Length: 381
Image (cartoon, rainbow, N blue to C red; front, side, top):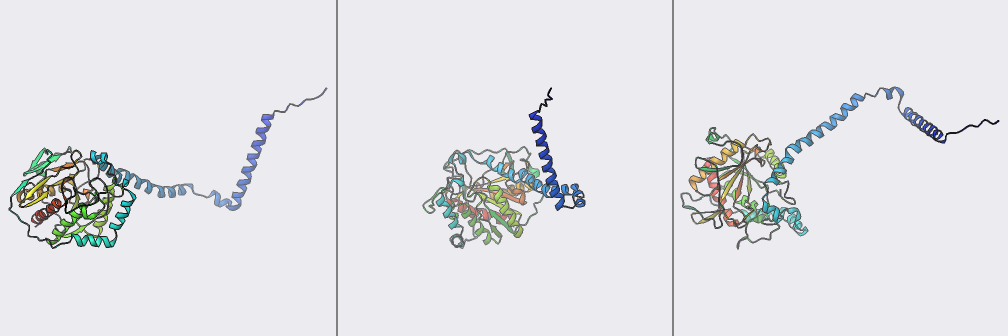
């Protein structure tokens, strides 16, 4: 009789595999212990290592969270307020051809900036006429609406905040000598005219600063300098090469400006864009001049962003427009108050001023700055 042993192949393979893994672990552990002393190995303080790791990561997480709740939210509100026509016409400047990028580089050289300054500087007289007849002469009007009126100043309140005469109860204390002018949408331009022909690099946009709201800002700067104000005019491109994100970029610019130039009066000069009517040309005749109408846009904290200055900003706009109504009736359209912040938390008298619309010419907008500067001079005395 024979004894027969039956070998289970599967169990044998498992046994051999386990043995090999165990030997490998022993080999690697021996290598580790040979490099790190036994005492050192077992004395590693895992809690300290964990805390050290958290110290590094938590500030990064906090910073990212802050951006997502604040700065990035500014981009969201910019997209929300972007007009329908801007989207339809595809004015995203990121789509501008490569040749236009080269043009922008040329515009931004020191030589060209010097030339721009020389072209814009002129001996502007501060003898601006007052007491002259004014008349609204818009050729292609659009109906305007408002739901609040304070001391003759019409306001279109698009927020849930109650706005009434109590907004003017306090005296507005501010630095009246320093003014910052900048442009969140630096490339906004106007209807070309015989005197101001230019090559568009977008719908009613150009990277040539001689024909944009930046040129309008130069005019306002020169007049204000003549009246004795200190002016910081920031002409940084904020909407090129990308339109979306302009408010985040202009926030960074003005924050940096304020580090070296203290100012409560911060004016973001824009050109209005009416989506349904590209030839809309809000205009007022003052004496013999045809000037583009102006419009305040005041932001609030209604969108959830930190904004402690919105009431003082609105008070500034109302008081200044009240003075304008006395001097040049019709120069300003109704104030618009919105939930978006528009970076106006940076100053006690921060505002957007829309200068004309796409149907206006650059000449009309330059005329506006003469009268706006006179109103500012009278108000701030």
